[in-house]
Image (tube, rainbow, N blue to C red; front, side, top):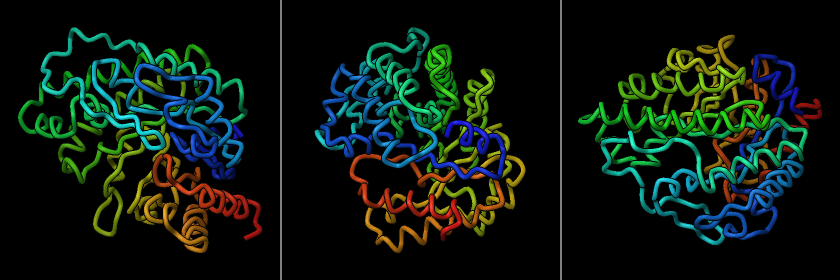
Length: 343
């Protein structure tokens, strides 16, 4: 499991591992309320680990994220408020650094429930043979969680010096988190979840000059420790009208996790031999509302279409509560059948 995943991540075409980036869907499988794992000021590392490992066994995947994830880990540490729906996904109600212009007094070391989340990674490491991947946020994405995406958007235009200081603080916090997990021996690789590091949101100029430039530094947090790194931005990077492969390559990432609306023919033509690839079936609409046939067909399109490059099968983004579990089973069964040559 672990070896096959890491082999594909480093460029081997032969294994076809599965890594579904489960963040909270495992709580649906375990049939537990969100607040049994996570609530204001509280995170149950043991319950989190049991949920993660249970979902890993359900799917047979080769790599896992080490805890049930939430922006609460960093939002609450710096004074923000969170929404905790009983069976839904946690989300910030307030962004703690919104309006701040000086971040020098903030301690980047993780505190509170962030340390409990790191403990979940350590527990998961002892419970599974799958690879354990550290899920951290990309530069503009993390800045948006802390300061609000609208505020960050304004900074891109009017307060670039403040934005640089904010992202520098974000990187310091990420370095501290990754260092603790690496010292524990809890992680095999890293993933930069970067939904709002996105050329469709900020424009290609900001994407290149801010997001990609700072992503290099975030990637290096892992690579300096000998750990491979996956990058997962959103937005239109590859289409019949666009090829931003040079920017993907510029980040230094080992693996590109493509999101929705990605033309895989353009992507592989641009990046073959430069990175490994990860991605697959769209969560919306396919996994949420698609028929069994639609799920199988779309899954097969990706597995067959990426058969000659280093490829890790995943969904188009992370998995959260509410995605039908039977659809996940259909998708993973299809991948296994294709890998075994039965389809």
